[in-house]
Image 1 (cartoon, rainbow, N blue to C red):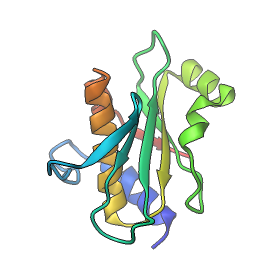
Image 2 (cartoon, rainbow, N blue to C red):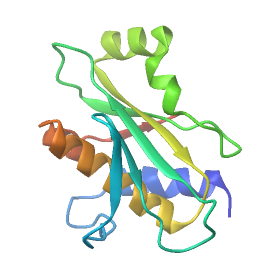
Image 3 (cartoon, rainbow, N blue to C red):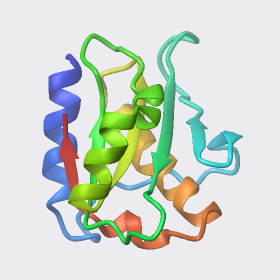
Length: 138
């Protein structure tokens, strides 16, 4: 499997009702915050080198309509992309949240990790409404 499979699953899941979405594992230690807007999900399978890290950015004064997922191909790190002026300007103009993704696994576990990371960040930052927004994938 490759990242295209992950993105296809995410696209399908983002269009489902919340009851149809992939179950998010609710075990006690699901991950840790790296900073207030960045969450690393602990992957309990695969190799120790696998990563699943997510950073959320929401423009000040805007309630986003969608989440633009910044996930470069080839298991690239998209975390820093949320800090790029061009992406932030675009997000402001289109009223989007940005979600930078660094996932080094292309399995269903990664989809669960994305949903878990977003959920934890949004709860901590008191923006839980973003969990119900559709995803736009880059």
